[in-house]
Image 1: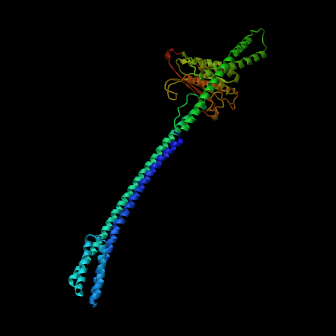
Image 2: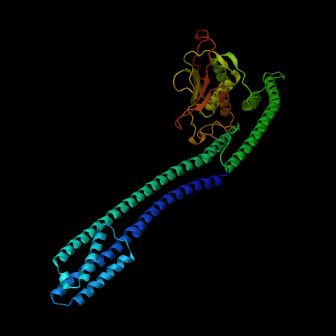
Image 3: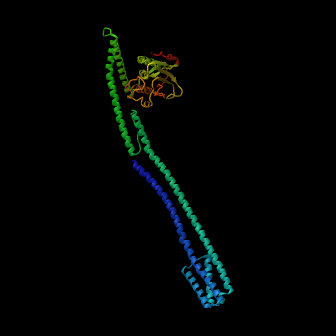
Length: 505
């Protein structure tokens, strides 16, 4: 599924949830509207009709009160009775127009006024109107009508309060439901955002990790990329590039191995020829100048042979060829051989090489030639950055406590110099192949950048590690070679410890 489709679907879900929340709120508003309409259409209309009847009945009472005053002033009955008859007819008309509109006490009081007015009109005299019985009945009806109206007002108030409670309850329910749905929408949005982000960030992280490994020259199988189609397409392109780079790396290693192999034979013959000449096999003695020239040629030849051998070993290790482990190998012996190989180099530079090897190290399984070459590379690198009169210290010790790469006994071979140290900008790339740069304030010449790369590959081929110690620039550099120790003999059977070597001049 493409990223756009995922985003559309996720946003559609959120829109549906928000529409649900809106529907709940609108439902609450509809309930409120319905309550108000029921109140206006029921209670208020009924109250308005009852008010009309109350007004008509009260008009009859007022007509009888005015009739009392008129009779006391001597107004003829015909005039008084005519006004009372008009009010009575109006009451009859209202009652006939809306029968049963008033109920309970109010209906009884209105009917009482109606009967009393008819009786007074039927009497036809002021004496009937002003009679004590009529006055008493009017007072009773007056109280009854007033009490009925007050009661009706209270009933309306109670109805309003009930509707208000219903409206408040509906509003609270709508708000709580809307808040709950909104909260659920927020949680759902966070979950969907997290899931969509994971479907993008995790494969991108895998692609980034693969790209970093490719940048460091690691062309092993890449991680399987999942997620949106766009990310998978990117992962497929990275995988195609990885395979192509792996093919190029294989071709490069094959080319280097072929060229190195082709160069090794003639270089070996040249070395033999130079050795024969130096031994005087050609006949006649050489002058000092000729011997010097021959020495320079032999040094150059040895350097080229060493470079070719390094290329061959590097190609073999890069191709994954198993190392040739030799059981019962002695660390101290190969250190002696490495120091002896670099004696002449140290002498030419005027650098002192010192060896410290406290304690005993039991024999183990190593590819002696490769480890010896790794140690020699470290020594040669330290000598090349040192000035005349400075010291290079090689220390071998057995480490079993904290600080080792993994649990178990380890042999640590550290090589320290007093040169300018490794600049911070080179620490991340110093172990890469063909990575070389002049070292400031040192006599080191620019090489081809294979010594440290080969030494690290040799260490890792033995399940060990080569690391640069964190030091201060300008205070020299220390390289630590870690080799796991597979004990095959007891300590009593191990050879004597390597004694500190005499400083080389």
